[in-house]
Image (cartoon, rainbow over all chains, first blue to last red; front, side, top):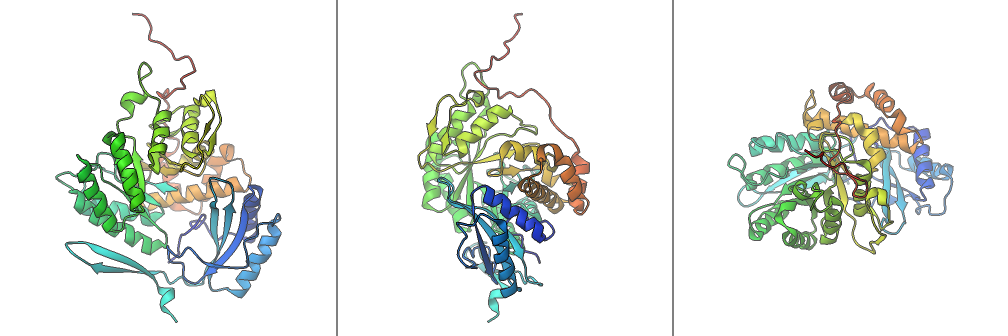
Length: 133
Length: 317
């Protein structure tokens, strides 16, 4: 399966030039770039591991691309995403987030159904990746 | 964000209705929605619908790794009935419920409080507004309703589109969207905003655009409405010749290529059709969508017009 979190997940994987263009756009909006990685992309796993600190003072996309490359080299078999954070009052949130690296095979998720009273079912989603030690 | 209203809205059994929800979510939408007149009917009891829709939502979430949602309409005859339905939605793990504007302001505020207390998003369908927002003689502008609803604490509101069958005058729509999304709205007579409005820390209201829109209009929608909006393609998803999943995928791909192109600095207003055509080369669902709806548009004079522009009066008989 192919997880489709974030923007651009339905497009062919972005090339480095395309990633760099998106980072340029984010920087032009005054947003701060952060690079994060994880082997467990559960839809509710909002805290991926940070690849260094968010780059609040960075003004050049090349600097962010260096970090993306370094993270890919260190964690080639994980999901890596680029986040752009907007500190503007009233937003104070991520405005753009997209995946820039995926494992060769994406294990996906198990949907567990726990049957309770009546016809009700309590659902749990488990990452297959998190089942391995 | 992308959504769709389940179609056909009347007449499907709960089980088939849930199928539409699953297909659309798996195909790439974030949300699917009950329509305003989906409450509880002989062919589809509300509890039955809630059960099947939550199966669809969770299954689609596991299939895509994304958080998905279906607006379960809890509109009912009394507050007690609405609380009962909303509590059931919560019990089933839904992240969102919806209400219709016709339940009234007091009920809307009660539901907003309920939604905060129960960690749920509250979607508002503006059913009934047309009876007084399009009255030039004694009505209330929808911009004012949007402001009241933001203050009442709802999270999503249907705020009109600039293209499609429910199209509005672009300036009027811009005014409504400002009222929903700004932290500070400046006076802008052309948009119908008569004075500066400081929203202090008041929560923003996510506008929803729906009604006769399709993938081929993506560049126009993004240009006019921006990206902090839920674009709901109902017929434009479910009417796709290759099925509902393909319809959803076409819309998601159209949205993503357009945002990507805009961020890359391309002039989407003029190059939009070309950008979509390029993507349609590798995305067959998008190609089929563009072929189906082509340049379908509903070009008629908008009934939502700015108040300060002189409006034509009826000719003397």
